[in-house]
Image (cartoon, rainbow, N blue to C red; front, top):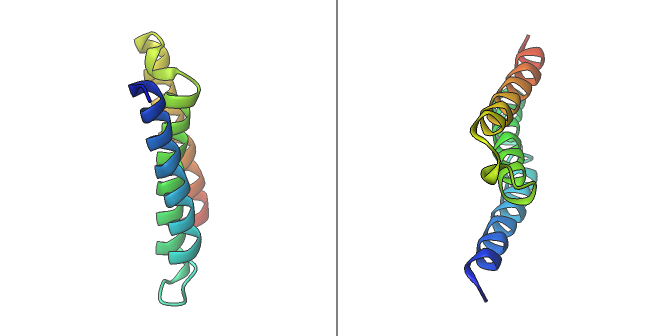
Amino acid sequence: MNSAVKSVVAVWLVLMLSTAASTWWFAQPTFSAAPGTVAVMVIAAIKVGLVMSHFMELRGAPRPWQIAGVVWVIATAGTVMGIYLM
């Protein structure tokens, strides 16, 4: 298995484990709604960043596109969390 395939498999595994963790762990009654939601949103933002960089090939794009992708993820997640926490 070459390094590109290993990288994709590793990212896929991180995505699957983080989905399972955020779905199961933050659904437990020990977490209140606001911190659990913020944690799930942060995990979702990280997952979006991983998908954009590894599966949409943003990491090989010109630097302005990479910056635009990161800014979009942060702005979108921040906006959703801000609206939720109001």
